[in-house]
Amino acid sequence: MNPINKTALITGASAGFGKATAEILAANGWNLIICGRRKVRLDVLERQLKEKYKVDVLSLSFDIRNNEEVKKAIAMLTDQWKEIDLLVNNAGLASGFAAIQEGNTDDWELMIDTNVKGLLYMTRCIAPMMIARKQGHIINIGSVAGKEVAALGNVYCATKHAVDALTKAMRIELLSHNIKVTQIAPGMAETEFSIVRFKGDDERAKNVYKGIEPLHAEDIAETIWWIVSRPPHVNINDIVIMPTAQANATTLIRN
View (cartoon, one colour):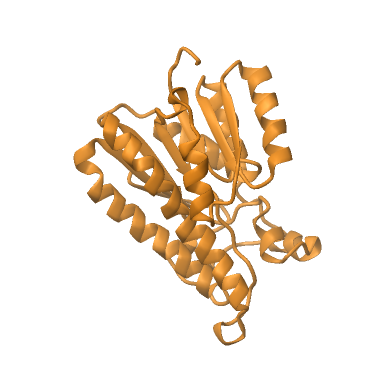
């Protein structure tokens, strides 16, 4: 393993915030477990990070919505990979954009299963490992949608409010075990988020960011690096991070 002897597990690592976070942690000497459903992308990222930064990287392809797949993947970790210092619960999505009375229940279940249950399944597997070592850090990627509610974002907002509440509960419950817990709540960010929300409609997704410079994946990755590089006695409980042109969930200025 790399001499720095720090290991992070990142969900949703094949793109967006997760991929950028893997890059910045590898650049700073961290070994990585990168997780996601798109195996080909993970394999490419694993190879690139190993070659560029000379760190150890393990890619695991599974669906965090499936508790049995999560438990099987984590159970297969060898001893050298079980000492996880950082869990980044990054995997999440929005699906659909409709009023509650017109919502697609398949979209609802997809968001709940990914954003809430997936985060819980991962935490349930990794937190006991951290407790056994009396150290660790869990970072949950929330959203400004977990702080406020916007029209047509009903169930997505509900899932991110759940992340907000779970982060607060985890911070309390893991406090006595010397485990840090943090939430990052981004505003508008240009990743695959809108493409997924609008089910591959690239033109509609592009219009979301028209006339504004949104956050980039690297902005969130740099924030994560700042958080994990604080000294042992410092925990960042919660960060809301916005583009300069956005004030809250619904107020922004377009050029």
